Length: 151
Image (cartoon, rainbow, N blue to C red):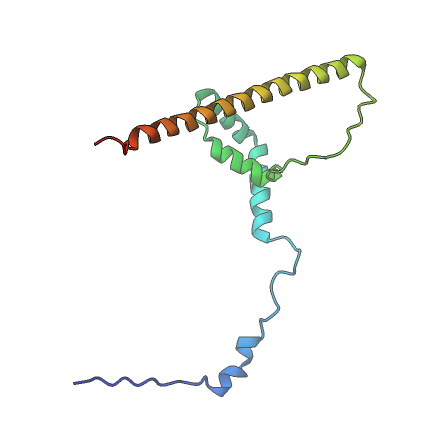
């Protein structure tokens, strides 16, 4: 009582391959680099809304009442003015301090000295914690290991 299955391969009809309807839109659309109309419309709407007197009054009321949704507010500002840069650029190399006064140099030196002391304390605490953990692990291991001399 075996059931036979037949697989039939259907080739696309020749007129489909050459049909203008399937090939005429290739390469069309928004040119590369041009802004999306929906993006522009959303930005303009958000800017108009944020600048309107009605919104400003409503915003003030909601802030005073504590009912303003911060997520909506942030989203509108991002749409209107763009999202702020998320990265921080750090320049390495020598820093020119020649423009600083003696008081400013002394203040920076004091701040750096405090940071060095704090870092040394953190490293010392970290080493102490590591040694405590290692000692505890050895103690537990010693307690759990049965003495083979006892019977």
